[in-house]
Length: 419
Ligand code: ATP
Ligand code: MG
Image 1 (tube, rainbow, N blue to C red):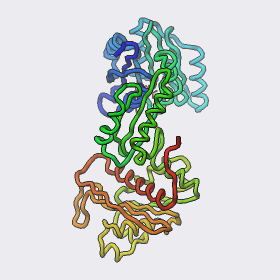
Image 2 (cartoon, protein in one colour):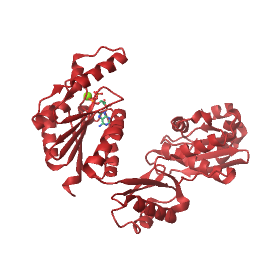
Image 3 (cartoon, rainbow, N blue to C red):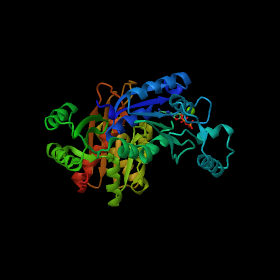
Image 4 (tube, helix red, strand yellow):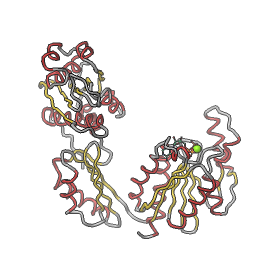
């Protein structure tokens, strides 16, 4: 590991140490740093404690080229990041007139009185450059000390991620790594991770492009990172190789989401979707609600946890009596009922039980997905015999994959990643 590219992260906040807040910032930055050519070698957590934080910063500066902190830029006394950076570099803080004006403007804009505590959010030290924070009051700091860099960003993830994208990442790319870095994520389904690894790794023995294999709830993601002057052609060749090896199993790339691609296709083709959910209890609707423009294709979801509700929403009682609520017949009838009641082109359903409560009539882990459209109905079972994590997510992904297959088969949907 060349010291030139060594990076480390310090997540600051007593609430993180106590486990009250999950440190998603470090996780996000850990996935982003390789895309800048920097190599992350450690992540540490510090409480809101002056001595501890100073000590940690000092050590970090000795061993890393770039030290990235998040948190502790708030206005209160326990927000100490600026104080520690100044102390470690033996510099004096002063209020920057331009930053103070911006801060006062923000408070005026929201019709709020600015507390005297907030003034420290307008501080700078001689070696710090302020990084704008369009989503909050605390600017970040880009601090240059000889050939070392300290970057201080705010704790709130939505502020931090935007500052990272707009300010920090571009600076690292241009000032530190001097590298042309390109990356591509290719998303597969229907293959076990071990098989993907085996088939892919024989082709990717180099570290440029570097290949990462990640198992996610929506399948296996392959992430390629290429660097150097030829990064574009290296990446393109590697991508072609992956398409050769895994072609039919590729469903998306980069920021593609399954339901995002499905939703786009539905909207473009003037088709609508309606859902009835038992096992997923509204999760499908919740996921779809995060897709921009979903009202253009999504007619809604009916949550049907009991036989009575299913019957009230149009599932024939005889079917439930004859086959049981967790059955292919009822899953299909639920999809039909959703389609009819919510006047949609396509009905989708999930039924069964994903929790560990055992009841006489329902076997935990056995679920059915149903689909209904103008061509008829179909259903599939998914059996989660051993309980695993994120079952709802897995079930939702399963439902969206079935829907995707149906659209490709019966509706001629392309649904392939572009490029
Ligand atoms: P603020 O001006 O909001 O006080 P700050 O820079 O001082 O910003 P903190 O006070 O440390 O940041 O954190 C503010 C909030 O941001 C926390 O309550 C927490 O919800 C969230 N947060 C902080 N650090 C992290 C982290 N590492 N991962 C995820 N969330 C975090
Ligand atoms: Mg704070």
